[in-house]
Length: 235
Image: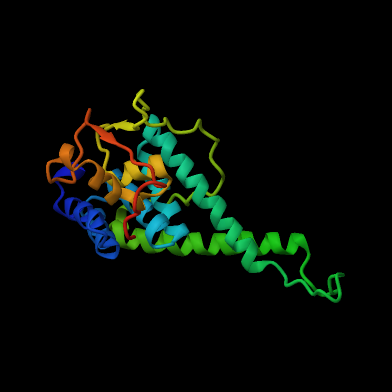
């Protein structure tokens, strides 16, 4: 069943646009129980877990599941960049958590303090354990046991792709974005601002184009307001 016809996927999109992130997550998970290979549901869950729920491991899992099905094209390149960014931030947080405290009066490390190689091994072990746990959980929720995907979640950094295409800037100075098939306000916000949190700003700036709806249509030209001169929406 296409994502656009799945009632749980549509419910998740509506709840996400309303800022009800936990309920939207639950709706997308229900969609995956019915259709474990729904790439768009995996993508929306990746965005929610990274931007709104601060769960990097779950975000990487769903980005990987999306990329297993969508392997080429601009959307795949964009999601690879998001996935790599999530992984980089996750490793940085782990390093900060596991880094030994610095003692001002004694700059020399204690004899029994962990070496750099010890810290690296701890990082790798922590990542492996977390990935194993989240993979098992997602398989239980999203797939029947007989068809569970046994492939591990990849942790290797993906090749760096060219930066995303910037919105068009006409002579008037206003920026516009041309909507592609499958775009949502959250995804456009993520592309142009680096986060999906400003979807309401896009909606408010394009009320005359959207005509009271939050749905985007391919070919539609929407304004991209500057964050510096606009009031940011509540997350």
